[in-house]
Length: 287
Image (cartoon, rainbow, N blue to C red; front, side, top):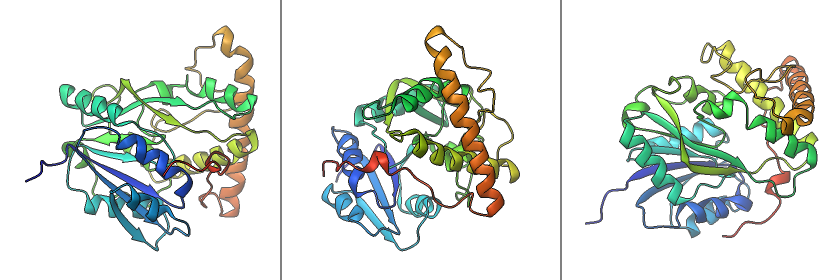
């Protein structure tokens, strides 16, 4: 009889055929026993085929949306800790091992790896924005979100089903107090792939703003540190080193523009419409 999985990984995926192979190849490269569940939701491409080619559990649904996909994945998954992973990020299996060992050794109900971003093919403004963003308290203050988070069985009892919100990571982050209940495993890391130009970045960040505003209006997050939050002056918690001084102006511009666009979209009733970056999904990943 085969041994039980050491963890379950749930990956919601909507038209992610170009990047899912990269995600799964990194995740499955190693001896760790993982139950991987890919929920292909509302796809019109080969997302499900890419997942099946990697030998993972595949759930297909015509219903489009990350939250329904997360709930379907939870219904199928059987093991803990449970890792929630976006299809467009890279998390190597060795980092999953480090993350889970970190959680178990400290009895943490929630944790996440350290975030790094891929700098290839980015415009200078986007690089500068992320240099500042990765120094904000949202990222440095025991991160949960932005592509990966893990919860123990006890931690998963904090909520029943994912609510109908855009910012699922912000919702989960707000359930656990920083330091005592959620921490960053700094020896583990995951890679995000930002939008490649500043206008694509503004569009994505406008949806982030709208999603976090939704959490606050629903009473699911009340603190600026529970969700990503900037403001016209940038994060006051950012230590402005000489290397960041000239870059902060770019961060403030993007953040301010994204907030104005987000407010406009909310006012028009389109603020929570699906907006994702396609510029970082152009290259065909290995399958």
